[in-house]
Image (cartoon, rainbow, N blue to C red):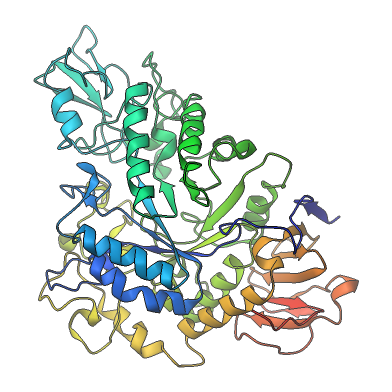
Length: 554
């Protein structure tokens, strides 16, 4: 039986927040475009690339961290929340991004990393001096157990204990990531106030929203209770972190009260957007709590797709069905690839045809109810870049080699010109992370203007999505299908689009609902444009969008 979701979806004539259904393009600045020849992407390079991004037809950009940092975790170890690292440029460069993006109709979202700072941050340097200074309680400090061991058994994401002994304080401090990334004590209202001032600083400079990093790590259990074992078999373990249920070092219930303070601050600047990253094996409850009732954040995404070994109909169906559109529910966002996960084309190509897989992935992503996030290079169909062990930069990959693919393969430099040095990313002889030579043949200049290229397909598909508002902001009806077929209807007012995909390995018969038997195909994994009636048989790894009303206005 078909299930109807989001019965309270807005009408075509109702006023809609700009972000609802917006397509966001993620930029990893170190690898996007280098303009000064030092081998590191920079803010000036982002400004140069904005016309290219706008031509894709997306609604906004999300820029990963560019703040002052020692770069031990490449910007996610912030030493000054209100500073720009010199390797990325200046405030004048940032202001040019804001000005040019807004002139092109693009919104600008930036990262905020509130869970932790760098150990070089002035707050931590003051906090570690003694136990009585004004910032003594701004980080998570604890005495050792009587035998000198850490306060709890908590493990860090990057390997080893989440506690580090600090000589000046004669205490342990908590670090859920690198030892150089001490966790802030966000239970402390003074810390919250300081972070809210950071938000105001960037909102005042014109940003349109924030992506909140590692949000469920923002608060810990003050009683420092031990985490229980996960029971995960050793063959599935890549690091000690996997061997615990993270019951006490993350996901504290008081996080939501802090989010309400963030929302109050955001509301001082109308029209802004917030999206949370929520990791972990059971993220849904937190995603719902973080986005509930219109008084916390607007949206959240998890790693349902980012770590999935295959794109399957049951996986997508389960993820969509978790967001029913009931009153008070937030709005989901979706990412198939990003800077933290191996690229989807590599994970999900079944038959060796990576360009076809890239097109199918985009066809599915842009049909989902929520905000699609396209990671730089995804529009080119880039596979995971090859990075030899001796060239790795990612501390997680180095620590856990060879049991994890790490993050470097998703962070290799963006290829702009196939025949240029460093594929047009930089004029430097050596870049911060080696590019994959295999990416050159997929460079922007090799695909621009070619009707059959993945880049042109993405542009055409985004244009088609804009012509059909139901695909951006409509509700969704999941349809009964064979296990390997995913089918749903996106509808808004009188506008409706049928989306159907065979994500299995066999040819399958599937007849569209009676209302769509005569529907015209708007797009498939092969092409964008009217190509005839919706098929009754779906080839493996195929899909389409179809409608009875062919709309032509943008």
